[in-house]
Length: 93
Image 1 (cartoon, rainbow, N blue to C red):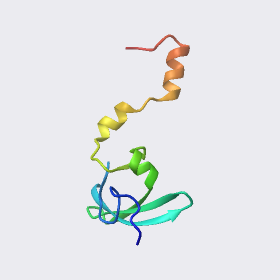
Image 2: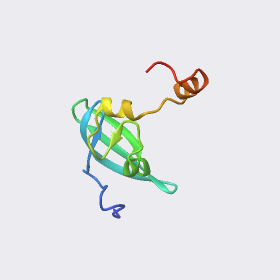
Image 3: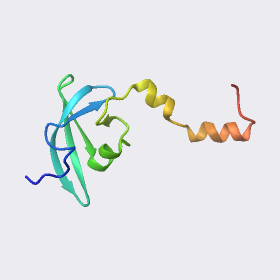
Image 4: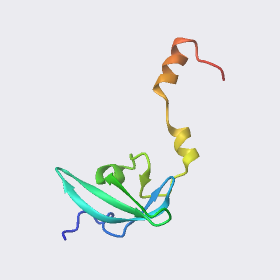
């Protein structure tokens, strides 16, 4: 099998915010991207993610670095809440 990326290949460790540490099981070409199948032994489950989202760390659940659930929730900006805050004067702080 041709090496796709030096940083992501079979057995590369990945992290899921709920399932913990896992590993890349396979990479399947999909148009201009790759579909990455990951296995998480703690829950005996497979998850899929696009290679582009994994490399740019934009997937909601899976990443190449360990992330905290609390950190991810504080980083997200709710567009509806922002619109309401702008409309009604900033809300309660």
